[in-house]
Length: 479
Ligand code: NAD
Image (cartoon, rainbow, N blue to C red; front, side):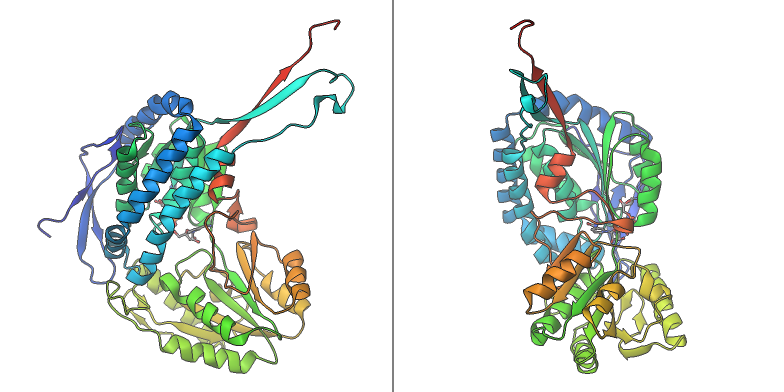
């Protein structure tokens, strides 16, 4: 398409020219949105060099200044949120009402990182806690690690980049971002915006490209820490390439949501519709499995199916649309194959089940064999499965029947039930009376098992991106 913009790597505070471009095609109409300048090894090396060169400036920047700049960035993100939202929808087909939620959250992620900069501190136990420590003094400060590599997914291509870049800066580091190839624009715009507010050139660099660009980044020795959000297969490859360097992994999920006998059923229904079908189900913490107390099961499943069938499919740019395309036709094809496999093995389709190119109809299914991919894999699609349970113990066993462990939710009016579930569920977070899709950006967030390791939330990410350096001051000998 004539006039489609070019997206270029952002290095050392400016865009840089490259030799090779890839077409960025949006999945709803299949139209060309932009031409993306792909970063080869040479471009990646330049970006890492720029980040390395800016390291001393960032490390020397006082905390009050880091915090001030992150808050200034938040103001610009707020002012530009509509343009960013439209660009994300245009590239990925994420429906505009959901994209607007993402861009409205992003300024707060930056503000939370500013507070993280201000509170990143630690205390040490008293040196004289053990013999030999008498009259010794100690301090331990958090120091920047250096150049951080941030590799990010397509599904929230602004806020998930901020979840790495803002804490890295809060901790006094520099960053090279390898954004998702389906949506590199927001990362580039963010880097530009951070330069505009006053972060030094080279503090944030962006190298668009695919897996090869990610691997080229990991091949750079000056990268000292890798922060990755994406799927488990890429996570494995990244960990393998990282060697001895620390790797923070925010991976996928297969979230169970328990609707207990004593739940506020209307609340559970509203939240599960929202949490299962937002962003076409393409969130790591989307509602995938709904475990419903047997006294409520049949009616709840039917009402859920009815609500799902009322969702509006259509143009992602239309504010009335609830369900748009998945990120690609091949992603939709994969999910559709899982749906058909389960149906042929006895599962009930209560609503949906169809595919129209990249669009998967909002689907509610029951009686899915728990050994099938539809049940076990991360679906990343607007498909919700319901299953009954009798006792809370059974619900917990069923919820834990997964190799993932990101966010789990329970709807109950009982604090005893909620605390029992919190204790027994194996997951990074247990949400009570909101769906698994609920996230407050400042709280610790991350998984266990195949959902990853490490925690995001700016304070926790900033801690992980700094190292503790201890100073021990001993008294002069003989005194
Ligand atoms: P993906 O794993 O395919 O890609 C993520 C990023 O990794 C992209 O930038 C990609 O180019 C890069 N990449 C892929 N293979 C690589 C390799 N071998 N070496 C280096 N880089 C490589 O994921 P996606 O399809 O963009 O996003 C969906 C996945 O992300 C889902 O599994 C979802 O659950 C997960 N996710 C997790 C969280 C979380 O916070 N836990 C949040 C959002 C998305």
